[in-house]
Image (tube, rainbow, N blue to C red):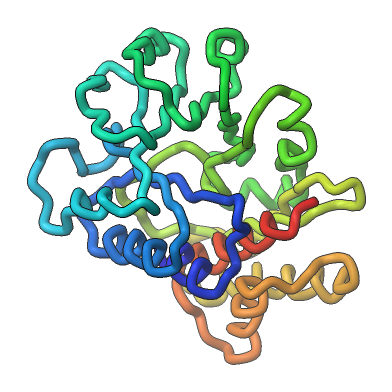
Length: 282
């Protein structure tokens, strides 16, 4: 949420990039994020029937965002699953999200979505036409952070190069954490910086900069500086090829200051880097 707030305020999100958020908890951060997009006159998609987390449709919330759906910049999105009810659709501008074929029949409500976001499944490709948007999960999730020491660099995505010829109106993915949702965090034995970059062919790849002292969860600051040192060395080697985004620049600044910002700030800056990187994709 903080990454989206700061990125939209600083113009780091491309005009044709629209964030899609599935609320997972009753939080003031979501309300502030939506308000930030409205203030900047930028569109944002919010899933109205989330299926993970602690936020359920129709349940009273302390930080309710229902009133924000009145804004022309806030577009409701509906997951086509067993909970979906066509009666929920109250406006002309909305989108559908289908992750499995089993509930695609629910879309036969007569309402036509502006976009229909679909998972990368052959059956969905066959039955969904019109303004369909591809949804993928290119992030490789390993059992532990230390395992990324054996996977330092890998292909991430080239959907931005081929989505049109594949018959899509757009493309999307879950970002650098992947689709898996974990409600609670826990101390980690390692710290990994997942950083996207573009190669000479214009494809997006991902580097995993991993700490070395991963025997226990002690000294997270030391682990952070181990991983950050690897990132700094890599960037200095390829400074002509790798643009220094706002997120990367701030992340590197902690090395010079000797400050460990915490995992929340690390994630925020990594997401800001991803958003700015995609702004400059060709």
